[in-house]
Image (cartoon, rainbow, N blue to C red; front, top):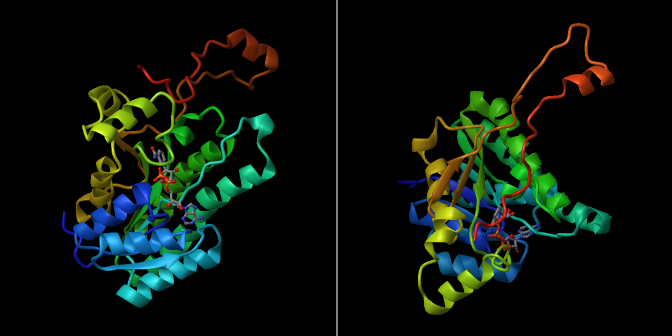
Length: 293
Ligand SMILES: NC(=O)c1ccc[n+]([C@@H]2O[C@H](COP(=O)([O-])OP(=O)(O)OC[C@H]3O[C@@H](n4cnc5c(N)ncnc54)[C@H](O)[C@@H]3O)[C@@H](O)[C@H]2O)c1
C-alpha cells in the first residue's frame, strides 16, 4: 500500500496501538501528526518513528485541541487526508460505584474527543474537496457491553453510531468513515487476567503469542492491527464506509449493525397484556464472550 503524499493525524499515538498506526502510516509513505496528552510520549514517538512526523502534545476532548491538530497538519504538511481517533483512557467500575468524574473523563476523551476531532477534520476535508478517510476506534465493549465499563461501553457504542451517521453525511464528499474494533496486547489490556500469563510468557521468552490467543481470542500484537488501518487509509478502501471492522491476532471480521431481528404485528397496536401473551422472541446475547481457555 502506497500512501505517499497523504497526510494523517493519529490521536493518542505516543504509545500502544496509536504509535503502531503512526509508524505503519509513515512506513507506507504518509506524513503524520503524532499526538498524545503526554509531551514525553510525543517526543519519544516522533524520535522513534522518524520520517515525516510532527508532534503535538494536547489533550484530545475539547474543540481547541481538535483545531490545533488539524491546523498543525495543514501548517506543516499543507493538507489533511486521514484522521484516526485513537486516544483513550479507562476508568473501570461497576455502575453503582462509578463516579461522575469516572463517567465524564471517559466520555470526554473517547466520545467528545472523537466528535470534536472528526468535526474539525470534516470541515477541512470538505474545503479541500479531495475526499478523505476518517477512521474511528471502537471496542468490543461498545459492540457487546462489558462488565465494569459503563462509561467506556457507552462511549465506544456511540463512536460506532457516529461512524454510521457520518458515513451518510460525508458520502457526497467522498470522505469514508469506518470504525475499527481492535484487540491487541497493550498497557490497556495486558493485565486482563485470562491473557496476562500467556502474554508475559511470550514477551519474556521472545516467542510469538500462542495460537489460542491469536486465533481463538483474536488477540495479538499492536502490529497485527496496523494492516487494516493502512488499508482503510488507502485508495483500495475508497468504497468502504459506514462499517465496523474487527481485527486482532489472526482474525479479521466484519461486525453486523443493529437491525430488527424478529417482527410481529397486531392491528391497532400492542397492549401490555397482548405483548405478554405473544412474547416469543429469542433474546439476543450480550457481553463480550468469556475467554475460551
Ligand atoms: N488494546 C486493545 O485491545 C483495545 C481494544 C479495543 C479498543 N482499544 C482502543 O484503542 C485505542 C488505543 O488503546 P491502547 O490499548 O493502545 O491504549 P494505551 O493506553 O496503550 O494508549 C492510549 C494512548 O492515548 C493517550 N491519551 C489518553 N488520553 C488522551 C487525550 N485526552 N489526548 C491525547 N492522548 C490521550 C495515552 O497517553 C496513551 O498514549 C483506545 O481508544 C482504546 O480504547 C484498544
